[in-house]
Image (tube, rainbow, N blue to C red):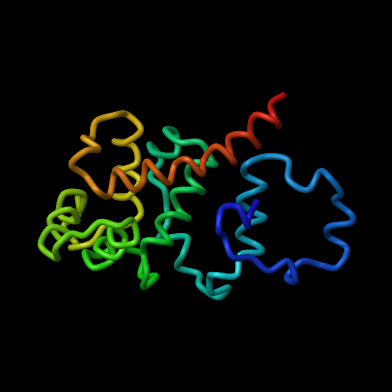
Length: 171
């Protein structure tokens, strides 16, 4: 699953008997999956204690998304946030559009940032990013004119993997 979602990981951080003791019941729900991924992912600094604050989810948004959606959005945000500052700048949006075969100017990228930058910091933080995802989910954004929204809709196709896990658990 980690390989399929392009999350870098290192199972060497687990005790040697971890896999054999858990057997097929390794992951039982989305929360346990998130905990497991945080434990084995190799693309973050283990001593970074400010990460929880940077990626805090506003309470009202926690009720709007499933745990698997929030995990996917955090992963997508980390991919876009090239400098791992906890915020997406205009140049990172330009890099995102180029990676998808498009091209926008620095001014267009900054205008896009300004559109979703509710605290006027000049960047899109994780909470603002989640508000964009909320608008996409509820159909209040015109996807034709919005390269960032279009990219996030394409990324949501990955979500079906996590939904399948949740459906298996509920059966």
